[in-house]
Length: 223
Ligand SMILES: *Cc1c(COP(=O)(O)O)cnc(C)c1O
Image 1: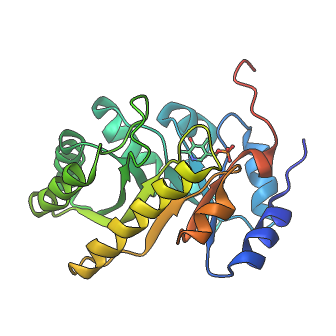
Image 2 (image 1 turned 60 degrees about the horizontal axis):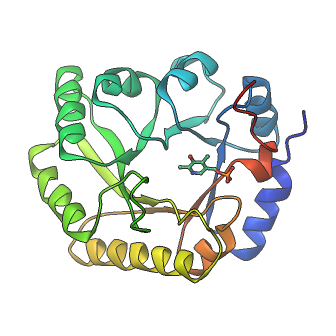
Image 3 (image 1 turned 90 degrees about the vertical axis):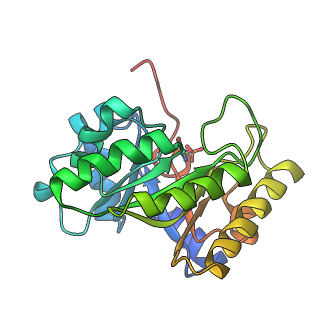
């Protein structure tokens, strides 16, 4: 097992010291998570509720300062479990999911931080709010969801990564983020950029990058 959080952290910091680095640990064992934690990682990302729940200890038993975010699509029937496992849900992508989370949180009398995911690339197979109009509807719907605290936006660049299409997708997302702030929303997280496109994302205004492969090595989905 070779985990290199420190190297990636230093690369990101040398480009922009104020950008947060999320270590995306999906498919990798908890030992690798602890190794990254030992190198300074505090923010972790997983894309599946079940995998995260069986990999990480329950929140009260985690190492000091460790925060876990859900970055994969969340089905409504797993919303309750997701609220028990994660510290933030970055992949909120429908009004129906907002309603389900709101209902559960009202029962728990808890507020909860979320990001809205924007499908900035226009690719059909991707999740996220389809366009600016859908995102603005979701922002308006926050009025009906007082327990959801919107902290910012997440987007995944186009599959063919790294080119002009990626840059434009990030630029569109940044423009929307700025617009929401201009409208008075108190946002602080613009989550864009993965192993293959994080430098481009930071150039386009990302302040949180989500890195898996460059920290933990290649994923083996058959393991
Ligand atoms: C897996 C994943 C990442 C990390 O991808 P790498 O290319 O391994 O850095 C980032 N964001 C999301 C939403 C992911 O599912």
